[in-house]
Length: 225
Image (cartoon, rainbow, N blue to C red; front, side, top):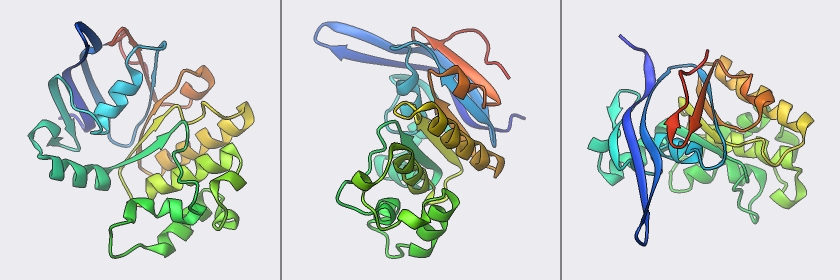
């Protein structure tokens, strides 16, 4: 039996713009193992971000089936899906998506905004893990790009999700900082988390155990690794 934590079967995604139908994903089937580090690459418009958004339950497929951690995403109601996503998936984005008026620690705690237990001690611990404990009270405009991304990674971990999804997390960083950030993802993966990362950079993709190439909304050849 497969130990896949993420399974896609014949996933299609179409967008309609006026009379034009755009095919973002065209029959994608994947089986990503629990605890693996997978990179998704391909040219602009290949469907990388669309695929990541569907895996992350931020978007629904037009057709096909998505199972995450053994659960059928298509069978869930919106409220169930929101709870599942909050518990199971952490997101890291290219542009950090930090709230400019909040401190680093407050940004880390943002996913717990409506929780009774804000778990400030866990936020402090995560900031230490990503090397940002000394910047906990600083706002995003006082941080470098690499520091902002470290805060974003800590925020993605606040609910202790088993899956981390990263969309071009090094796209706005210099090469040295990029390697620092990707090394941090590697450590998280070695700690048992499943990491799925979209990137167009070969130097970043080589850190993954398995690489998936997309082209024109389809898997381009067999996954490597």
